[in-house]
Length: 66
Image 1 (cartoon, one colour):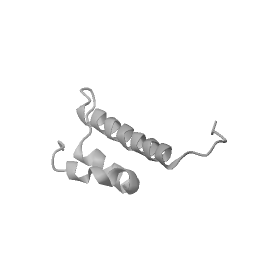
Image 2 (cartoon, helix red, strand yellow):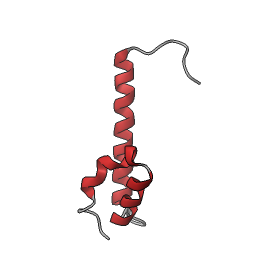
Image 3 (cartoon, one colour):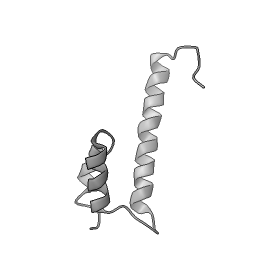
Image 4 (cartoon, one colour):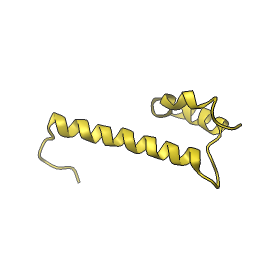
């Protein structure tokens, strides 16, 4: 449930910072997964489907396996 007390700019900054960090951690978990690691084809599909979320990882395309 959302709080009725407005957040300060500092609180909004740290909340956004946490969201970005969580996304980075999730991406690295997908890349390093032993059972089903992220492939170049997977990342290309993610970027096509949701570019605002995944295009920042495009530099990984040449580092991932096919």
